[in-house]
Image 1 (cartoon, rainbow, N blue to C red):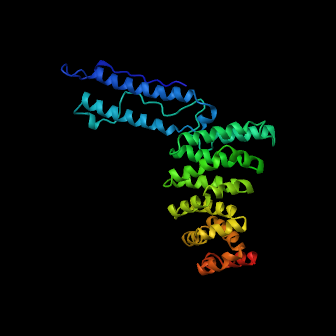
Image 2 (cartoon, rainbow, N blue to C red):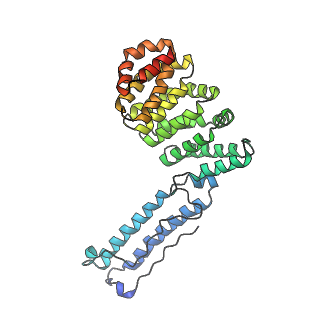
Length: 326
């Protein structure tokens, strides 16, 4: 991939005073910007395929914005009386499209598409498909840029997709994925999309007992509840978080711990806030069902107003929850 900035300034377009040689200064600033863009493109060309899949092309919008400001600034210097009335320029724009493998412009995650193709080709043979190295690459990228929301979202979504069964979930966890995800949640607590994608990955990882235990031991329950507390009105965070709580509260020990941490009250608060969002309510019901399965939690849930919240959400929700629990 190559990017070039061509400059064409005709004598007729110049009204430069002899006392102020503007051209050398203008060309110098353009040369510096060109070198910066070429360096970024060179870095991109040297990336592995999976790094390209996580590449954020929005960085190049800054160059387009700079060109616009450059044009306005120099138009004002060259034609001070007419620049403010002019809306056109003979200067070409920096290319804003990045071709030959650009992934940032496509939200469908080409890395996930490539992983899917590999798995389809090799069937259930995880190692033959090379997924170990893919997971390692994703985790390394997330660790190398922990506060880059784009990388964290795409990395978590890629890991979520790769967690298809017990073997794959354990393979993902073996690559240090769980502490990496939880660290991402800690460092990006104000980024709702990061919190939602991280919770979504925890949902899948928690479906296997060994990885679920690792999440709980690494304070995953606390991380999910913190995300819910930080983003109460965000439906994406709430339904992903409640789905994670449902899977994480699979045994009596986990159900008791979640109740101690205030999980029941948090889920009920979510239901009150999102009473008209069926997708959120569905996952809230799942989390409450698992909490209420532990008899020691049922009284505290009733005291917290669970029956009324469930009746407000729908006439059959309390019946579904407490009948299946008893």
